[in-house]
Length: 304
Length: 180
Image (cartoon, rainbow over all chains, first blue to last red; front, side, top):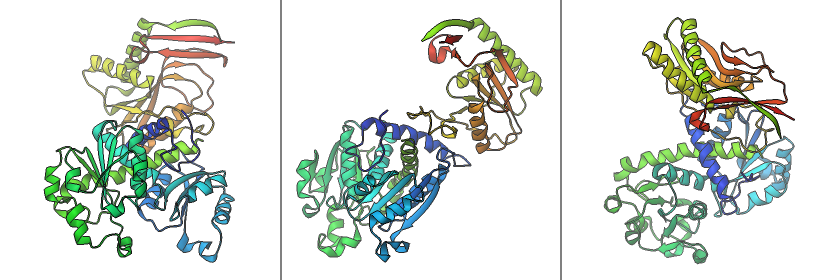
């Protein structure tokens, strides 16, 4: 199998490596059911979580993944770091490297940060989200969840709904799912669909009601409320009316359609709380799968 | 590469060994009480399944059978190059206070068994762990000693022992390769 040194995006990650991630993640899912959820695979290795953008869930997921692999974990976030004292990104990285990190997990609000860092470090770099660009481990866990439920990815009809323009989750999922032969389409308000969408092999819908009927997988994106005041969405009420997965729309889906969400869900905005009992278990399973996927990614990169 | 290939065990001999080890396990444990079997991936699992059937034929009791993949417990992960094949672990019974018979095909340096012991301990605290192997070829690097041995084969480090089982290889046999 071809080894890779960094996980920066899915576009440039070989298919067979991704397949291996899925296989290893299946084994780690078993480890997560044990009374003692810990294996010594990364004993003696150091994983640094370098988070320049606030994140709780992804950081905790990476932190737990590293700890369950017996790695030593250092969490480094901007609020407490010297970035605020004016230290440059590269200087921060070099400082961390001199602590002999083996894997650096990076999250930043600027697209491309992990790429720059990967050029200047001996450690493996994992992109945990860079701006609106890419979030490969989220896409891997979404694909893994679908693969476990459906047994395959090829030929499945996948619909991604919401703010496509600002979504690194959408971008990575489009890269990942199309790589494995799924037919991906996106749906959202016209101003939240990027103008370069024609560069991707996806179908575009503006009307959710037209889009949903024959889909095997629907990924509802989170409405980033922090962007609400930027004028992209006139009102949440309107958005909800047009793009919320409500009870009526839910009943028009195929019986076996998987409904996923990268979390955290704004109930009654993206998804109606009336269907919460039907959709929440899978969304929680995504979180569990995320842990297994991140363990697999750290495990495979650590052997580089 | 191979200078010579000698067959050291055939199908019939392996069958008798499985039956003998099954009897020895029952003799040592004085019955099936608290016994359970754990096979190490891959061929240890097939041997464990055969011992399970064999003990059933003697005692009319099916023992719980677990499967162990030791990949994540290896101490040479960084050294062995390409990612080793990861198989599944499945121990779906409580091993606390049980007597576990750990089963593998070849006992060599003892490092696989060390991994397996560590992994079993992560599932609980068994009362006792026995070790059963089809072939003991010597050259231990750790203080590990089997309780049940199919056949002792004194080997040199230049030789290679290969166990073939019907489940994975289409035949039951053990070969000794003398390498150049």
